[in-house]
Image (tube, rainbow, N blue to C red):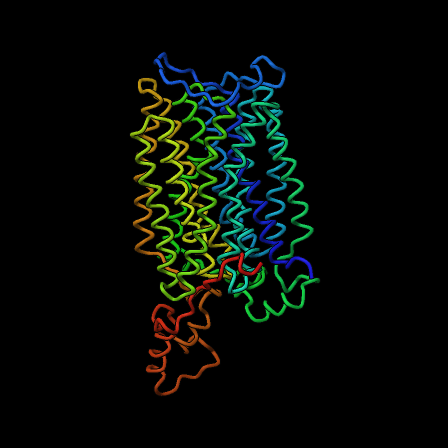
Length: 516
């Protein structure tokens, strides 16, 4: 029988996110390694050294640039600015055209940029690096909305949450892998080795993905009998990508939806924190614990991401079980995952602003970042609840929350650039601001989020309008009693007015391992 095709889709989605999201951490780690801060003359009595030194600075495999650390943080900002402009267009493209091709081409071109970066860096071309990073952000923007559309199309009702959770575990594990690999290769091989490695693997993955994966199960020529029977019984409600589907996007209803705004706020806050973890924490460790080399920074920075990945997977089990058992509704499950995960993380991040010992910093960071893994069963899965057909569009809109990443890296750059304030104190302020914003996002999501499929989920409610307002139908001749009929139908069409027991709950699947 072989491996079920949907498992292959999830596995390749996991690998794709593991690589593409890791590009951010890889670049940040390389910058930390080749751009050294000008430390103050403050005495640091406590040495931090875990392993032997890296290759000598004067080695041909090492590089030291006369750039400022603040300048390298602006390079990270350029990447997020570029991505801002293609999140929504990427979701629209994935709805109009093949999401597999959109995702594959996005990662392919971004991987080529990774291979080009070492040449620009080697020649100390700051402007060229800025341009490539911006271009990389623009190119990579559509990848996540597109892959969300692929998984939405391939997810049977009983496996929706588990498939998105496993695939997105690659995104959350990616910083740990990228930081550890970057630290190791930069320290013991060559400063640009990790850029070529990730770029090459990304090119290989994109080619395999576009060859092996198709847009939906119905388009797959070699689907097994058992798997086809599963889709006949539990097919995703998502419509196939087409011009008709794209033209029917209910923009007004999406943009005025409070549950959709809750997803955006959750994404904004998450991007603020996630960009800090990916691009700023290595610089924070370099500023605060000066004797750490790049290998040690990479290893320590990756620990919290490993903890988060574990909680991401196990948290998906817990939330799905609670929903499946009927103990909580989908809406309560989404809010519980989001608020508990991000709430604990926000408190821990605020606490980092009061801690100066490395051991305590690592414990608090691991606890906070680990619990944030619960929230992948919150806002990250939520677009598939609201509208399977337009999951790519909703994901694209939510990912404009990358504005949070832009503001996060800008805030860190500006605060760190102050000459009269020590770098250690600057990072305390960065943590306090980030934690406060995260708590505000938790509150908003807890009030306005929903786990129900929305009434506009399958396109603009033209049919609903025809029923509610029969006079809008040219083939309908108004008859006596139509007013009462319209009033009755207007109550039926609005999804939130349906009795709770008759609502279509979002799917609450068993856990992935049970079907293995």
